[in-house]
Image 1 (spheres, rainbow, N blue to C red):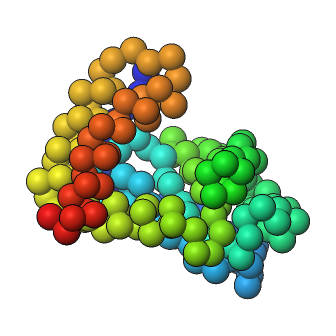
Image 2 (image 1 turned 180 degrees about the vertical axis):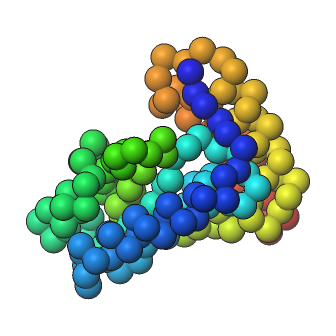
Length: 169
């Protein structure tokens, strides 16, 4: 079952703690570290998972950053060369009920701007924030084989919101 919780004001602090660990571990290789996803939007219901966007020079060049990311406690879960060389790491800090997802992309990748635009739009537009929360809560009530199936089910509302971003609505 997918758990969608009311917004927790502790999520930004959880992000900051992890972002500092990442910046400290990667040094100059961390070009940008951003809080993305639903936990980055004040007032938005979300799964208790902090999504972090890490921008590096070249996400395919894992030797530049992977050991440092792993030293911060993350585990590599996926390589997606077909999706802008995306790398996905995660971890659940000891004693925490909040997971951490780390999305690694190369500088200049269009997905970076797409993620940031979605976050910023939801922060600024209460009607879309409420729409997204409602759909996520409804979907969370259904039985899913896995979290990916739930994520795919959100695509319609995500695409609707992105169309408003793209048109400036």
